Image (cartoon, rainbow, N blue to C red; front, side, top):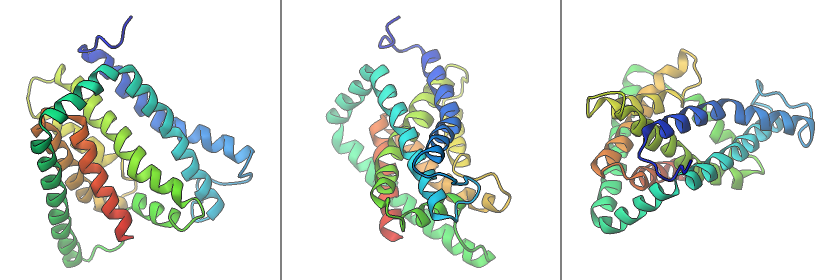
Length: 238
């Protein structure tokens, strides 16, 4: 079976679900390996401990590498087609990236003002972990993960794979994009009630990335570009 003859959404569906499973078990597998080798005695439930946090972030780094390589290789014709279309429409697509990024900044500022008014302080657990990790000796690994790996694999999973799959299951032209935006936002929360307060922040990010993706006729590089600029700003502002 030649997986590069891919306009069959079932392959994208398989890819989405396999990657979601790997997002859960992949980092855990690498963490266990590290706990028996380099970082013995670390505890994944105690990320306030520098060694445990280091092992956690290193595990996350390595767990993202394989799915990126495999996804790009297996669906390489689709990715090449995306590059071709980006080159053909680069002025329009770059404009979408810039406008999407600016819109995220504006709406995040508005969200910050609202949070201040209602007395919500702090940041999400996901953001807190990244901020702590940047103070560790493995800072270069964190920067690569946040700036390169995260925008690539998350956009591949939640935009390219998920939306392509949902389009064959849902007749509405908008619902697949809405579901993609919501699911992307939810996976950035740690599942606690307190962290739900920061769902709007991730919805803002996800909504404009998804909108940019749709306006560019589902060009994955537009989504990655907006995501990259947002993460770059987050790193610079820490």
